[in-house]
Image 1 (tube, rainbow, N blue to C red):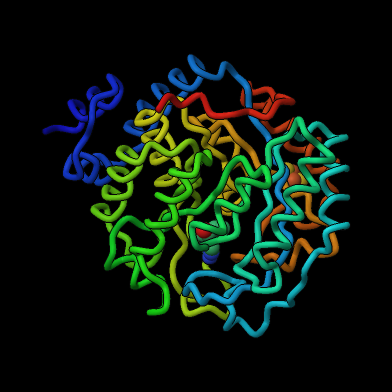
Image 2: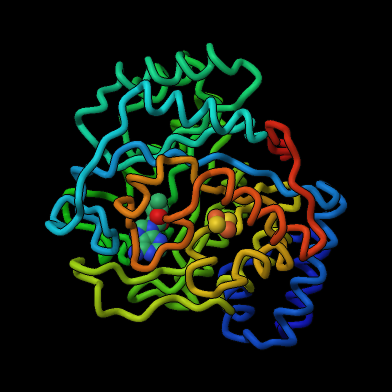
Length: 349
Ligand code: 5AD
Ligand code: FES
């Protein structure tokens, strides 16, 4: 099938197969990106208007027991300066965020054994008690179903767990043998079954990724129908096995944002910090390509540089209020408007 036919099918909301997505990816060009972005923004506007949802990201621990080859806070990364926020510090980030207009808090951290299921349960309960009108999103990695259930019971609304890649062999080339593709997918299924709004996603341009690999990710997204999809370019991190690899590109990330918006018009799609890191206007371009979420940092400035998943991360020196002011101006510059709302997904099951 030719690329125009695939694009039209995509815009009509018809299913595309792996070969079709691979063809689209291989055909990447400024013209194709512009066509997809135009259609993607139109779909986004029909569902969400010009609203851009903001989520306050609290990076509460950079300890991690895992050793993902790409990640700057992997256990083996000796140069990472480790920190943990206390429950009181986390609550104070939420208080400050609430004053600024945030109604979703995303607790993100490495898989840190110090934060036992019960500790995280207590933190979720405390946030929901202090801010009953807010959504709590957890992003703390792989856990048994019972643990996910405990946190859901405590009031957690959403869970972000990027699938990283839907190709088993590629998954194994990005992770050590202790981690498995099957467990990752098991986690996503369990989260869904427990009633979480679920976010998956992948890096763009990770080492060894091919058009076919990305096509497989898109087929997975099309069939799993997550409420949220987080994608950003791979950016090498120092002192990791991938420190000398090439970064993913702005262009491919933008193309994929548009394709994902067309696959799932109701999806919550962030213009990620990684996208803002590879290009000074990356997040604005992300919104123009169909993204409708931004996740500024609410972590205390004293720890921000330490949550270095990759090198040269932006927004590590700014107070939450400055960051929000900057982001608001950026979003308005592309015709968007920040909204104060929980911003639940409009995805129909
Ligand atoms: N470059 C870009 N993204 C990264 N992540 C981890 N390391 C990197 C990197 N070097 C992403 C992963 C993870 C999310 C929290 O950050 O996809 O799931
Ligand atoms: Fe963080 Fe611009 S959004 S400083």
